[in-house]
Amino acid sequence: MRRDLRIGTMFLAVLAALGIGSLVLDRMAGVKAAAVMAPRFEVDPMWPKPLPNHWLLGNAIGVGVDSNDHIWIVHRQASLEMMENYAAANPPGPKRQMGVVESECCEPAPPVLEFDEAGNLIGHWGGPGEGYDWPETNHGIFIDYKGNVWIGGNGRPRPGQAPAPGAGRGGARGAAAPEGQATPGYFNDNMILKFTQSGKFLMQIGKPGQSKGSNDVENVKGAAKMYVDPKTNELYVADGYGNHRVIVFDAETGKYKRHWGAYGNKPDDTPLGRYNPADPPAQQFRNPVHCAELSNDGLLYVCDRPNDRIQVFKPDGTFLKEVFIKKNTLGDGSVWDIAFSKDPQQKYMYLADGSNEKVYIILRETMEILTSFGDGGRQPGEFYAVHSIATDSKGNIFTTETYRGQRIQKFLNKGLAPVTKKDQGVVWPKAGKG
Image 1 (tube, rainbow, N blue to C red):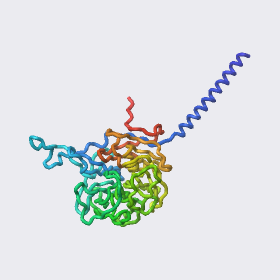
Image 2: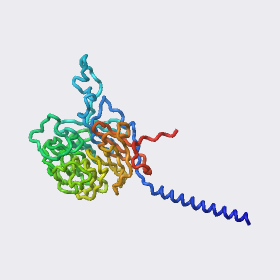
Image 3: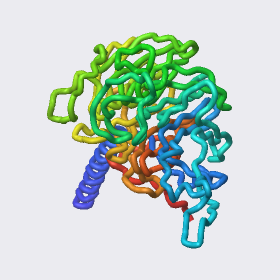
């Protein structure tokens, strides 16, 4: 009898343990199923390969990817420091007590560079030429669905340089930093340029120094970034550093289509003063309006950089919604550039923040930040003013850095993974298994 009782008690204990274990397992399975997933990336510290000819990059101010997964960047030759530029000096090299010493290194690379997937430099061109006005300071590069290359610019006069005769005046006010808010008055770069991939000039929209402000339909004023809609062949321009608007042109003829400011309003160049996160949301864009990116489902995402916000529109300029990103960021602002994941639904959006030195991974449907990667610094996977961002067909991310960052980086798409940290820091490659 006692033996039967002991067996029965043990049996009940086993059943209870199994029940508790099953409950724990069920809960663990539920937690795992509910885990937030997001694309995971690792920096490729060996990409790209070294440039030939002792070439160096200046401010790397735009990046784009074409249909062949070739990666294009545009940079500013004139932004190199003197000691980076010895080989281009005339005569070459620094002066010393014993006379002029020739130097093999270094000089600026051509403004437009094309890399293949392996990081080899396979094309280069750019600069002043016959029939068009090259920007004082180029800004932004986009390769459209036909393979055409678009370039903008945000140049003001250099110190001591007079505005061009007959140049238009007026515009926005703000901090006097090359990548910050626009300075008062004259802008040279009131144009957008269109080239073939070999650098043949095709079209120019606008003329240097001719902008009449944010409701001028003939010129832009410090255009930051371009996008061409393959469905309509319309060119969307984030315009930009002097103006406070999005403007749309026909990408074939350059004919004006439409434009608008924040919330779909008519843009206004009245100075807004400095951004204060405690104030009500500004009813106009601040300078610079830094990106205008169209999603596959026909939503236009606009980077209102110093206002720390993304505004979303229909292609006709109808305002839909806005979201603030790191709203307390002052100075250069937090919303620098965006790119989308390469699934057909473009489920995720990637946002480059050159002030906080991060790339945010955002769930596009809700605009929720899922996680981020990056940190300030000069090592691979770190950023110094991460400025522009693009994705290739495999979902890899490419970033460029302005100011003294002067480089392009590649982040390899490692697929979806559970989000374990809101801020991942430097996404260094995982150590191989021995």
